[in-house]
Image (tube, rainbow, N blue to C red):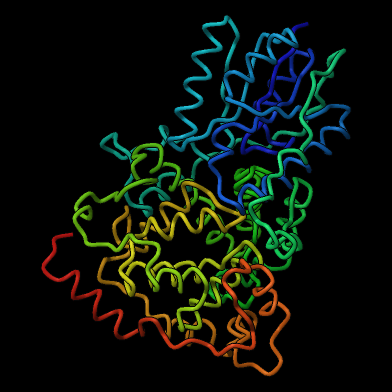
Length: 469
């Protein structure tokens, strides 16, 4: 029987994988493939570094099934055509993606393969609900989250698929060596600092979900905004690489809700918030590159990344402890607490009046859980120029936010070393992770604010005054 190529992308798991399951149904050889194409080359340092762990874990899981993951580098269509010739494959399948870059690539691949007489089929699995299946009463797409949630909250989500056993070909095609790709090279010395904070692979992701449901979910609703509480699921890094499916999170949350756990719905709503981001990216792809609300195009954002205030923000040296603690958490762990993300984004876009794209691009370089849809929507939501956005005149006060969500300074103490007699290990790790040319030391003085909370709010409101948003 002819072989089928399964092209893995952001679906690096074996269970609940519709494309892989369908490929295995016929009983013929199945050849799993990962391609280091132009979309991988465009990734930032931290996402690319984290991707290496995901690929390694998937390769081991496939080996345990008697299969292999074939690694190739090049343009996706060219690589797939080469593999078709080498293996005699008659079909290629993959899990759909929805960001503009992926859609453009996949359309080209599907058209090219069909021209060659090769069956090319895409499958769902990256989101809960295909973006074109969720419509308003008037037939359009949703621009506000609350009615989106009301539309989907009672829908059925397909049951999870068991991991299949792919049939092996008589001869495997050649594969690149993952180490030769050097996916972590751009991290430089930061790789060794971030690595202990990585939890990679399908089995680790499922264990993380089980632990969250059993131990953390009861406190989730009341503690999820407290950055030092460790009551979040931390599944974002696993979701973004598809080491776990959103459907598995949905079913776990809904099952907990049926069993009487009141916080479960809040958790499921956060999973659906991710779906909403992809819903918007699919219907309005401009959200990833420009103001979603086009009336913001004339707003006088600062865009020069060489400005001293931008560099201070990137270095976690703004003099605003909550902002700096969050940025340092990101450099050490590759993560940032969700409440903290809103604070640092608000400070950059409103107190410093810097374009949200500067922050979005920096996050895309520094986060191991970087997600093109969630990152774009999150930044535009906070800046005020996106769909379902925080009102433009809402300026988060980073001082009062710290007092409310970190009253005992546990989060600050975990990440800021300057001025402390005995800094925490995590705070000191920051100085090991950042570039050496920043010339930073925990023994130096903590900086004065670049812009104080009150000054920044006043300047932002003055800039907004008289504008029609």
